Amino acid sequence: DGGITQSPKYLFRKEGQNVTLSCEQNLNHDAMYWYRQDPGQGLRLIYYSQIVNDFQKGDIAEGYSVSREKKESFPLTVTSAQKNPTAFYLCASSIEGRLSEELFFGEGSRLTVL
Amino acid sequence: AQKITQTQPGMFVQEKEAVTLDCTYDTSDQSYGLFWYKQPSSGEMIFLIYQGSYDEQNATEGRYSLNFQKARKSANLVISASQLGDSAMYFCAMTSSGSARQLTFGSGTQLTVLP
Image 1 (spheres, chains in turn yellow, blue):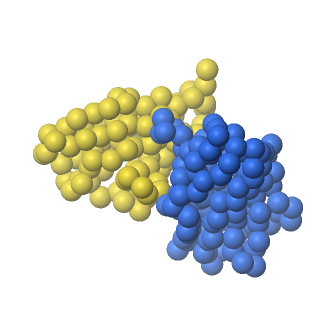
Image 2 (tube, helix red, strand yellow):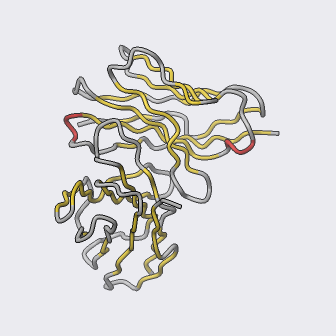
């Protein structure tokens, strides 16, 4: 089945540690995105990539980093510089990143900083 | 900059009845797209319906329809014949030509369908 796989589903981290969230898609989509969701709020864009080896910052990129070395993979690293990293993280993809395209989402990764 | 406003934090509807979830938007771009997504308690976001700013007819997808009123900048979601499985969080979102295709989300409406 085609789709987006995020791992791990739950992750606990101590303060000061970096952590990497995995996102893999087998939909052959060009564009991929990372969103953050806090309780009772909508999604906010962290980073997006419309092509391999290229990515752009979203609204809340500080404290995060990404890479896009392969079309199907878009990992997100939450660094120790992110002041409030506890949140639900959603990865998404779309065919080409055009205006009218729906986003396909993974099931999310819930990060808790202890 | 673009902005989405959903003023109903929570809504209740009786099973088999219709419900309207409100969404207003703000953008200075002429070309934009409006989306509705559903988020069940499992967390995954599910695409429901899309309306382009130049589309003259309201979008429909099965039991979902989008009441698009361009002059009022509103894009309300109508769910007909509600089912228990419709209980979820619903998000309105938009993207525009001036936003580098970034999808901006509203804060969501929690819909509960009562048996």
